[in-house]
Image 1 (tube, rainbow, N blue to C red):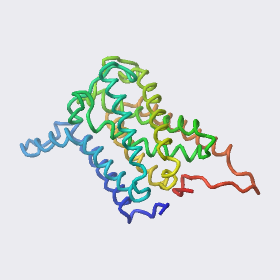
Image 2 (cartoon, helix red, strand yellow; image 1 turned 180 degrees about the horizontal axis):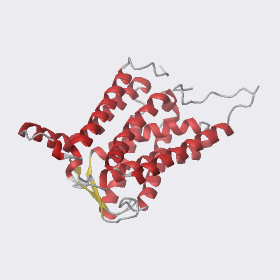
Image 3 (cartoon, helix red, strand yellow; image 1 turned 60 degrees about the vertical axis):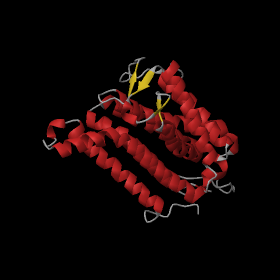
Image 4 (spheres, one colour; image 1 turned 60 degrees about the horizontal axis):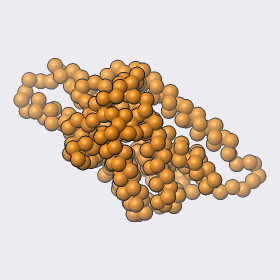
Length: 292
């Protein structure tokens, strides 16, 4: 099985549920999270909102994990499990260093809104969220840099696609109360220091190198690109939608411009390496959703 067969499949249904939850969470956040005066003065509803708001980010990550893991099992068996362990470990180590010593992201700390923490510093869902976006970032980078000789281009572009997520994620989660994490080192981008993006790129390159070394070139081609692009978009929609609802228009513009730039790189590089008429070349993944 190497192609996404539509929404009438477990992974298709999972994508719809994931998208539906994301939209409902954003609607609730826009209606009540930013306008608590709209909440009816009913104790049960108020209690439900307080609980749901505390857990909706955690549920979004866990639900996204279930959807992605089912998808990976169906298309690649268990060959991706070593990459999951490696990415989780690398991300945990980076976050643990960051929350303790300010390296490589700057000084920050997580609040209680993301649940239980390792060593009272890193919520357990955070390293998992790195894996959830590392997989589509790596596979999407293969579309642009599919050849074995393009390894460094693929790893750097995959790390970039992963890092772009943080342009929406960070201001959405740390700029306005309630905070999911707080910066001690501040910077010009909604309080985020620029070193954070360098930390994301550096950690991203290490993560993508681990994915590549642990069999990514063997199991990633089996994953439908179209599905993963949709999954990436739904995951991005949560923080991006929060930016729109909060009116953080500079972050909205920066995020859109950055993704437009990444798309331009894909288009220009794909045109550069497009097949010469009359010359037979090996197939490569495409954004239509097919794999080699």
